Length: 330
Image 1: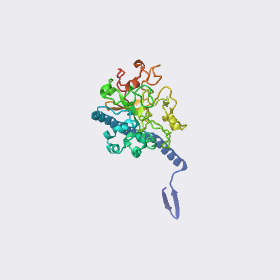
Image 2: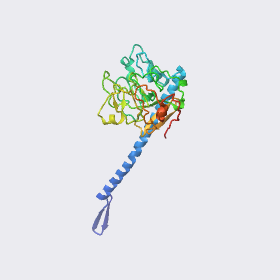
Image 3: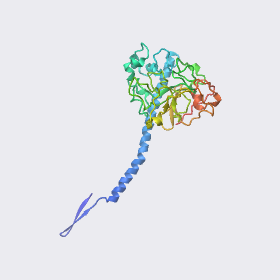
Image 4: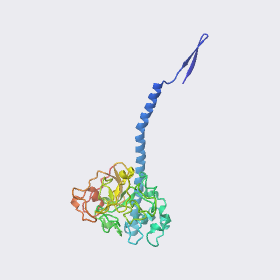
């Protein structure tokens, strides 16, 4: 507020300058409108950065899978029939610059998650920044957001055998068995970590995204339902909750008479990020073509009808003979 004094003879006139209440309220209202317009742009920019970081993580894992195949002659199995119940990502550690962590794993005995104190070590590569739950909860080892493609059909609680995807028990998938082509077959996709995880290591554990214990389809997904499906996931021992976050992002039921189904899910707007078997990475929208009417398999390992499969299922199946290019969005 400015102040001036004007002298006229022996008289002094004081003039005060300032904002009126109406002017002040108008300025506050304008600032509020500008902030309201700016916040969505800021949030969009932050999500764009998170999605870019997530894509980079997936790219590094996809390249690690390529390196594993170059060194071993096959992609790691979803689970190995040795009783250790280690997920496929543990075998990938030396190929994604985590050889030091791999060297600390005690591989003796069975059920390695029960005897390894290194199971809670941070591995930022497996966490999508858009998922607030993945890095916070650690019962039975760390959880991750990048899961292996088990295929289009329903699966059993122990990774099945001979499914139509890349990862299953003792799969050791070789590139030559991916007859639909490496650039046209999914190898990994995003999944979300449930907010309903138990706090106790001894509790029955939510398996989705669990890296160290793959007995219950830990780090895996299938294309039985489309990305971010409104159909709830179905698998043994998944944790239920009335929490709104759980209901919106990671709904699940442990009642699974027709086989296990785990959808690819993410918190990115409109879809999920995936990697193909050739190492390429892209974004697939939720509205990608799915099953034709009557095409969804009704039981575990039911034979697939290729004429009923949508683009999403064709991308997940490695040998259906109906090759389609991934419909990557910008």
